[in-house]
Image (cartoon, rainbow, N blue to C red):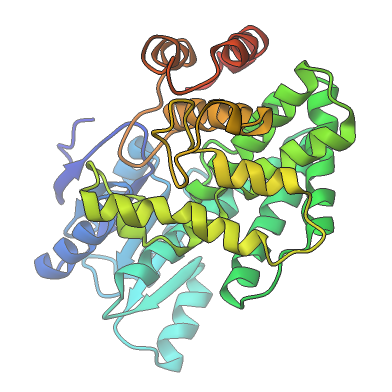
Length: 378
């Protein structure tokens, strides 16, 4: 994307990331914001509002982040102008305020801003605020989907968000709640009405939720393909949704690192499996299959997986299915640091390079059943 308009200072564009426009006349502040967000989003920077309105029509960013005192309009007046323009009326805007005075908060609210933060802003706070706004926009679009798909997405994201609170408070996971949230997903799979679910979650900004929902959906499809009864599909589906909840303990800097993890970082990343097991084992009513899926989805047939180094016959079909789906989803997932791999390419990699690690017979069944359905991933 060319960036020749007045006031634009820097660009960092990667097509598979959301684009955030940052407007701040202070070079140091703008650089701090750029550095904080660079790993997660495309960033376009402006020193002032000259030419900004016209540029926003071309750029169509996901969010506008603007300093309160930016020249020439000032943030509050600029947001009022955006809200009067049909093309920018719904653009999410966050204002960076100089103080949390009542006057500032009232002005931000009255001008139509979607959120505000008070400087100096912590990196974690700005990322959380942006992510919440992005997800609100995505989830609003779900209402346009058929009822069963909407229920599947709405129910699973709500229960997933509650899981984070339960884990933070040391509380057990209520299996019945997770199962009920997964029921519409299973219904959608069994009626071959699930692609809207997979497409609807693509742009959601909570990667752990996105990956977990995709794994849950594909495990449910796997179960349907081998004609498992619905109650066993439910174990697969809920197991998929819960299989990575231990990642809530992993620092964002490791979970979203744009490069290869070093050895110490990889040890931290691997700990998500044991953390997941600890969370799940607090629940007396959880089917054993769910713990198996969570605990063994990184194990390999040749014994080189983790955390237990299990091999061969020690891995049951649930673990083998979960490993295939988890690897396929990881390869075809859209990440902040990589574009998604095409389904055909991902399957070729799995067949040609992972034959010692995964069950090739089950992979063949997976490929036969899902390739056509998954061609629309991009």
